[in-house]
Image (cartoon, rainbow, N blue to C red; front, side, top):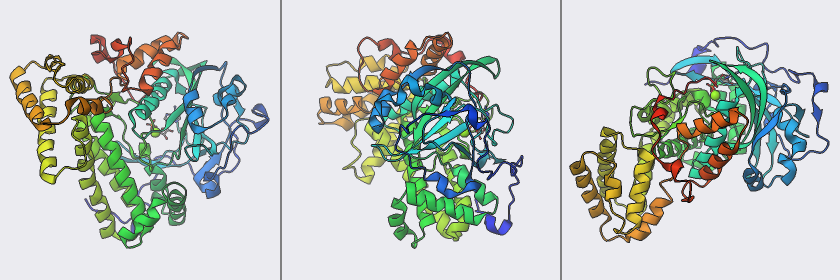
Length: 534
Ligand code: AMP
Ligand code: MG
């Protein structure tokens, strides 16, 4: 691949639909201001650093009110972790989290970005159904807050700006599940349901999800200004990301001839490599890894047709609409590299050195396999540190052989690792047959198992197993579990959603009495088709 110096080529990527009339319009109110009352006192310590960027980056607007809002879920745990007031998720603020009132002190806006979708330049996109309320200080550092599904924005294109209850429940539960697994992600603060009809393949109902993250900025935000040939705005945005979110770039620049933008690319590639290693290790398929769905902070963002794999299949495609399998499980790491290449191309006018840029990208090619190797060794209870390179290579062979075995029999991925962890934790008293039961080819399993036990050698198995039980989750958000909670919620009962949230926020705990949630999926689960529509 060769990097195209976009500054020299001008603006080769003409947006598919020009939104210039919408861009940069300050104080545009999609809803009349008088219809949205502001709550009397600011409930949060706001700071709004994003708005200092200037009007070319966003459009100010108000959410569109939704009919008869009601709480579907409230994440009091997250509010407490952030140190936000206890009454933030009280009934007084329900209208604000529905988009029917303004949270006091918020400064709502939608940001503009572009991106590559399914391998093609898609032109201008932007927050089509996400409204940024502001940035507030928290115990975990500054956090931005977005309403998702709170009505159209100038970037909605032909969309309605709404989100359906079904997909909002999936995002709420999955972002909290990812956090429980220790995987970087945007978080879900609360979910409001409304009977307002929303048309997708069928008629569904609306919901508004409130999510938080240190920043919602994506690769696509930088791509947007690069594609416009607007190097000043590109630099302003990159400087903002470095100063406000990734200050480690300053020190990292010493590795890259003092170039802070090369350092930015380096930090993003490193975080992306770590993220992808964690996705692969836990069997997570994102489903829509377009560059506009890639976080500059290396967070999992924009949960759509994602899936935690049931039976292990490297070629698994979770997105029913992805007919070519571009985003199949085993392709995710290469797609992340492809996306980083797009980001590199966007940053090239700032880095101003093609060789240096390509050199930075090389980091992913060594960093990702290393991160994945460490993650898989940890799953096997082989501590990441203290390993020689030769040992790492031998361990990787053990991992590869295991994955081939799991794939050849479509062994349930989560169940396998959990059972293996228990078997090791029992120090040999818990029969390996419990794991063996998962395989048809007993001889092949036995061969692998003998090699594995030999590798563990004289280790304290009970101790190793305990670590494995904190590494290999008992509970993941399987599609059928989400589906059951969704069907119940669609009839107005949110108890199943609540139960799932409780299990998934501590997925390594045993949760006695909830074994069924860790079982093999029922037959009907394989019939579930999850598409991009949400
Ligand atoms: P996604 O594939 O969900 O990441 O969305 C791609 C682009 O389409 C983003 O710019 C979204 O904001 C926008 N979008 C998706 N769904 C809608 C919708 N219902 N209304 C308006 N914009 C949407
Ligand atoms: Mg998106």
